[in-house]
Amino acid sequence: MWNIPNALTTFRLLLIPVFAVLFYLPYSWAFFAAAFIFWLASVTDILDGYLARKLEQSTPFGAFLDPVADKVMVSVALVMLATYYQNHFVTVAAIIIISREIVISALREWMAELGKRDDVAVSSLGKFKTAAQMLAIIGLIWQYAPWMINISYALLAIATLLTVTSMLAYFYAAKSQLTKS
Image 1 (spheres, rainbow, N blue to C red):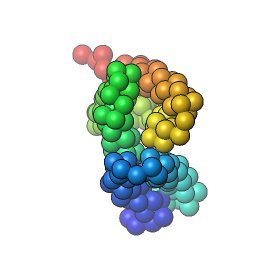
Image 2: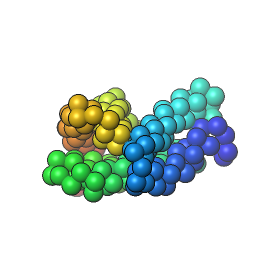
Image 3: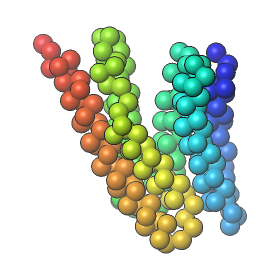
Image 4: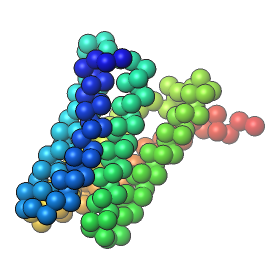
């Protein structure tokens, strides 16, 4: 159960409260530090999956924990950003992204019960969504300059559009099971 990929996933979960504390510190460097921690967590997300495949260390525990860590990390960041920015765009994007994660997790669980989990496996569209989402979140946390915030808003819009598109693609892939009588 304990191997390098699972240790990285666990490390990512442990970074979440560190990220939250840094985000709320009243220091000029706090947003950069919080953005760095979120970036580090994002890198461990990429690295743990790569190492699990490369080292042939995939485990049921890792298969369970990795998506949980991802969803918790992103959800915490989006809720914090919606609270911080207090604008409709960030709030609606956060609601759409978090809701999609819950819905797709439930869809995957249901499809797994039917023995059809592979029908709703992670797609390349989902990977593009994740990349845009992570970059948007990092930029919105760091807030280095107005141009960074504007680019981050654009990336968040792209991520939100890809969120909806990929959700529809997952539902289309599960259509035959969802429409059975």
